Amino acid sequence: MAIPVLVLNGPNLNLLGLREPGIYGSATLADIEELCRLTGERLDLEVDFRQSNHEGELVDFIHAARTTARGIAINAGAYTHTSIALHDAIRAVALPTVELHLSNVHARESFRHHSYLAPAATGVICGFGPRSYVLALEALAGILAG
Ligand code: DQA
Image (cartoon, rainbow, N blue to C red):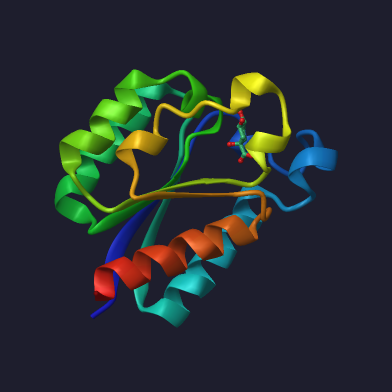
């Protein structure tokens, strides 16, 4: 039986493909969803793929995952750098959680160097473009198999 995992996307990621392609590339969020589904099939993970521009809705998705998923991969976008609520939600549900980013946030503006999620996450992956999602799912599959 495939293991259910939540792949959660935060604000502005719905505009991938159009948004600053020099930084984020040409893949759309639908392309990344498809990549996650194919990766899930390979790893025997059932991927629930979601996006919201609203902090509270992201909190609700994380809470729901407590009973519907066994792990979370999250690209919280700019909320990574601002949201104590997402930090608390990740701690509250106590699921293995991988923080991920398309871009290498540490090579960018200093306000992107701090993450409120990282201390609550199992680990962090950034800088590999859409492949960051694949790496995050591989990390989750390894944790959940162990
Ligand atoms: C991002 C990096 C964040 O700093 C930014 O606010 C985003 C996207 C990434 O995937 O590289 O929206 O999370």
